[in-house]
Image (tube, rainbow, N blue to C red):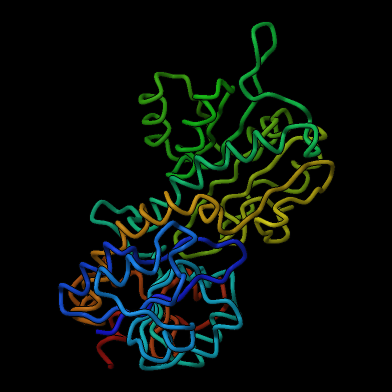
Length: 373
């Protein structure tokens, strides 16, 4: 298999999909790796390291896309990359097409095989390729929120940890999954008053247990959430439905009642956002906007700002799957139902139910689609 690693071109996206160590592993397994020059520089990996690992360098993205059978990326294709999609190529990356109809159309029209990191299941029912970036984004969300609360960013001037004689800031985390738990850990470590809202009693019991009760938990219903959000200094949106659009759990009416200068960080924005007022995806260049007196942070590639950590964490998780695909192609999916859950598009068909529902498209069972091939 010829594995292509193009340079990421999304705004301020400094991650790279395969490290020199990953390239070395693939080459030793008998595969060819083509890396666009300077693809790894944003994460601190130089071209010379890839050459030493046995990879070949390509002068530009067009060469990578033209030569490779499989493209391994970090983020979804941007519009200028749609031209490179083709039927005889497999794409392995974060796709997030439930919230991106134009990319979905491009994948379907080109009949490209699109396998999404975010919908591959783990043996324990988790999402093994989403988890590492969810951990990063969850931890970053509090760091970013604390920064935006400072006065010169338009925030209310609240220090999350407080000081002796002054109450700490209140942090509301909506969703107790990987993002939510990591956000709650960091916020609690900073000394904030933290409440996690969820609908899963067992998950809340787990959070209460591991935090020794320092992280408060509450059942997520509209009344409870409304009252908590109204009094919050920082709200973290961390609701996930794998592969599908995120539900709008925090409504505009709730946001209208928040304190002026409070902050919302909607980590679910890459799946459409779970806050009704998160109406646009922002970038690291211009990450925030204000609505109803509340600062909204809605950057879709948050981990790209801490690229070294993110690249190593992500590539370590994806490499075993990349190897399987390089060795066996789509047969690797036929042999593993959890891996098959990553198949979102195949030969012009939508093969993930959540994506089909979000886009209003016909759904084709992935097993049936692969059997027809």
